[in-house]
Length: 196
Image (tube, rainbow, N blue to C red; front, side):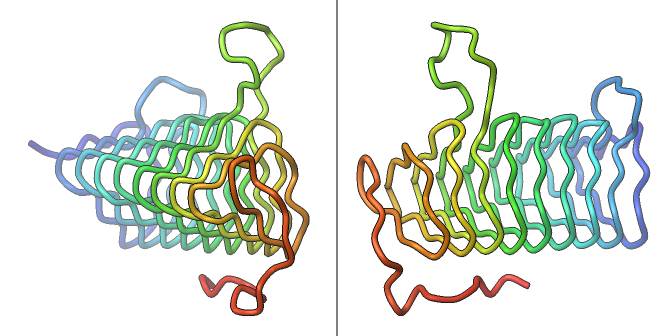
């Protein structure tokens, strides 16, 4: 088996493993990948995706069309980015993260394993349109947290593992529980993420 490279413009020093597909689908724009990318086996990156330098995937990652990703972004194994999404630079999306369409993720953001972001307030019941969460710069989302449609996680906020976020989380606060309640950020969590 070998990699499949279709409609793609790749920078210098990119590595595309066996059994990866880059440039999937027929769109007006090619996949554009910056310098030094590593795309591992089983991953699929659609056409009409723009990715900066230093992009790294685990195995079996999906990045759908209409996605823009900044520099130095890690996308963990079996993570799905369902397209029409903006992701900043210095972002770590760990294993099994789900990012739906119409989501915005800022820079210097950490999203823990198994976190689920949602974009449909009343799935299949109404035609309200899709609106994913907004995660602002420096925020951290713990493992297995769930963010409901349209919520905003403020700058440098922290969502505890397993929390279900139903309302906006202000900057520099901690959201914990189901449904999540907002508390002051404990001293050990104060300050910016160390991803850059």
